[in-house]
Length: 400
Image 1 (cartoon, helix red, strand yellow):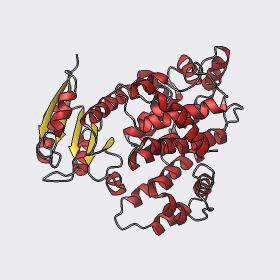
Image 2 (image 1 turned 45 degrees about the vertical axis):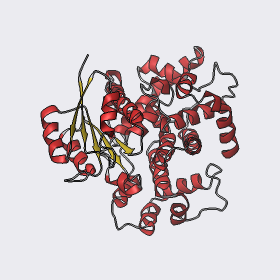
Image 3 (image 1 turned 135 degrees about the vertical axis):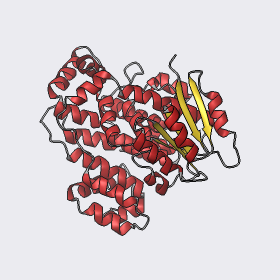
């Protein structure tokens, strides 16, 4: 059994034994160290180079976000968790690019343990040799949209304003057009028509607008090769539907605002791997489509037969290169088969899988459990099978 090292930094206010509870729930393959501050943590990192570091935001000598930034620069492969009382946008923006998971301090220790295991498993998936070889064969991978990068940078500015954000987004005509198309659709159910970016931000919040900007910018980078079964426009429309449904489901589950916005972004990006296949592996995608039809296979299983990887894994790998957090990578990578997750918890993956599966069943007029895209084993592990009919009715009534 390979030993895995993990370092916990700091302590929960009012409950100094909280990290000890998490440690006690980890398996025998884990060796854990606990330190009180960032200075001690940096020494331990040099000595152990642990697989995972979990830090409180509030430390005696520096912010946990700054500690994890330094850790990311020195040990880029280390998995980095930040635990914070602040679940607001400011904390999230401080940590973009160097924190894999932002965790609310209210999270149950058992849930945090599952998150740690899921992130380790996700790294193993990303290290799949077949996947790495396929990605390496792509001459030039897409970059994050320029407007999105500018938006993230502006959101880190403590003196930013809605007006500045609106001006920045409005400079990109193509993305602005898709932003309005999405916001004024039935997916968001707004009573009046939104005709300015600032109005959209005030109504839906910066996080939602940021998610739509990223998704719209991604789709604008790809040229449609004209494959009959899969046009970029059709993939975009389905992605918007899945994102909107995932957001609704996250609300229905009572997930936090952060997880709800992760569900929206993950849903809108869940098919980004299909775009990569469409433009870089068109021949193999055509073979996969034919195999899926002839052998009555789900497309992602046919992709495994032909390419050795699915579009879900390929999409998650691309997004990992862009520095998106693990909650989004996990939801994209496992949206077909969430039961592959070693520690099932109710999160963005749950919402995105159900949104995708409901949309798939609806489009393909699936009526029976045997051919449904819903992963019943996963729902059983979460003890929410009985909720499925009401969740389906909820989404059908809210999104038309």
